[in-house]
Length: 282
Image (tube, rainbow, N blue to C red; front, side, top):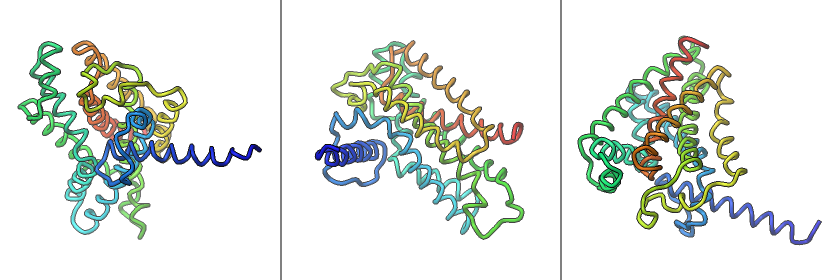
């Protein structure tokens, strides 16, 4: 074995750790070491770890739910879980969804849509869109624990009792952060790259290996669920494809805000499909 092989391996590991922490910094408010910055080279590679960030956000949401469910109520647990997720990400995706709603709701040309999307103020379409998506998410989430097995005779292990709900949240957050990666890989960034919030992500597509790794990360939590839930990938993929076509029709591609919109919509679609699968298939 060459003498310099070990240093090379450790260098690659450090580099990948840097890329992962860059993804953490980009998508969340979680503190990372000060040497992690918005390096374009690292940001270009970071999308492969977006689904892993979903594991983290989903895990924080799950733990918050379990604590508030135990000491308050199911509804308060759901609200606290949603708030925990929003605080963890700094409402990054919700902000993108609101801006996208305002832009496509109020703009009738590519130029007007992009101008509205860059306006930091929230308009009627954005406010209504946020209310609809957050309310829908709450309603769907409060239904999910009802389908958790064995709650009539719970054990002392709350993680076991709510294993279905935990698996659903982890998978939803993971898969819904894979769908923006699909958009990045198969569409075109259209905002001025000098001012866009996702400009480093637009400079270069992921390599085939990195893209496959992102898909593995995004789909891995399905291992926690029964095989029937794999059917959810079909409607989530279809909705992502339709949103991609819609964005391409009106503005020729995607923006950073569009990525946030896709994450929010596909997360909601996942919860709805999970309820359908549980009620009619499992």
